[in-house]
Image (cartoon, rainbow, N blue to C red; front, side):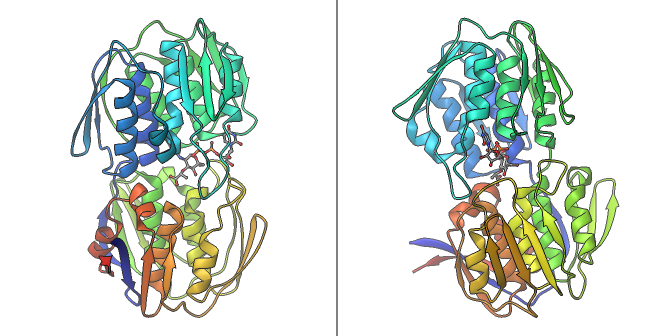
Amino acid sequence: MKNIIVATGGRSLEGSIEVHGAKNAALPIIAATILATGECHLEGVPLLQDVVTMSNVIRSIGLGVEANGRELVIVPTPTVNPEVPSELMRKLRASNLVMGPLLGRYHYFRVPYPGGCAIGSRPMNIHLKGLAAMGAEITEKQGFIEAKTKGLRGTDIYLDFPSVGATENLMMAAVLADGVTNLHNAAREPEIIDLQNFLNNIGACISGAGEGTIVIEGVKELDGTSYKIIPDRIEAATFLAAAVGTGGDILIKSCLPQHFLSVLAKFKEMGAKISIYKDGIRVKGPQRLKAVDCKTLPYPGFPTDVQPQLMALMTVAEGTSVLVESIFENRFKHVAELRRLGADIKVEGQIAVVNGVRSLSGSNVEASDLRAGAALVIAGLMAEGETIIEGINHIDRGYEQIEKSFQKLGAQIERKIKN
Ligand code: EPZ
């Protein structure tokens, strides 16, 4: 038996909604607790499959993890098992974020390659090059990566690409290193700043996150702390897109607008009216969207994690839109599904040309990854008639009961068991 989501279009979303804690801040921070010698209390953790999997990853290493709703209590362990089981690593690519903390504190790890996923091959060369520069001896054989060191030392590292995961792994490896590490061309995402703040709360000495160079001064030991995860900017952008696409009028509360200004600018260009308050955003969608061009870029550029949702809006905008995906090499899996709803999209490599149609019409579609799935839900809320979305296990990895959030905003949408 499989879960499906059934969405019926034609309604404009109205009302208010709260966003949850950021998945992509929670995952590296859970990994970072490997470095702590004291108990860590994390609050505002989203109730997501990926968080459960990451909790199981650090449990497999030996840490104690107790989940009470949106709070995680993580208890350090005197001894670790620095080898993460393959089935866990394969389930969640972000489990590669244990590499930095394990090497930094225990001077060893052996992990299976987490493997690629629907959106690309996801190599880890930038992670491993940086760890080697800090003094790690790395061997890759039979699908495993093994790293050991007598002790990491601070150094200058120039990232070939501002990789989010590589920046996070190298920050966590450097906090206990001997000396100062400068990470140049580091990722600038808000989740990187959240990781810096968490690490400094347990006693690290880091500055510069959110700018081009992050400076990490090695310290001797790290303690425990209590910490609240930042709100999820991608979930907020997803709710925004649904309101903009259905000509709705919603208020999104407990989000940080400054974390997704590029998304707000793009939606305004399409005709949305946006008002920013201290604790949220009000967005009103236009009668008809205007076509726009967009290229996904590292932060603060337009985020790749909102590319599929933007494309869903482009399918019914007036005019022709050009969308360039510059971060991942294979993040257009949602195009074939949007075409099934009547979209007119041509793809050439990393470029999609979207000719806006008057309206989409409901059909059966399948999600290939979590953001593509969210885009198909939005398209289903915009399409005439009923849309059945399969593959919603992908959506549940990154969104807490997405259908309930949209039901709160007046959408006709429900989760069913496919017989
Ligand atoms: C993080 O993935 C996010 N995941 C992704 O969100 C997000 O799409 C991505 O950053 C980009 O913003 C988490 O934070 C858990 P990258 P990450 O390393 O760290 C290439 C979602 O939907 N690259 O910045 O894996 C890589 O192949 C997920 O929540 C190398 O070539 O992304 C990709 O093309 C999906 N070598 C580009 O860089 C490396 O060593 C960006 O990857 C590392 C990355």
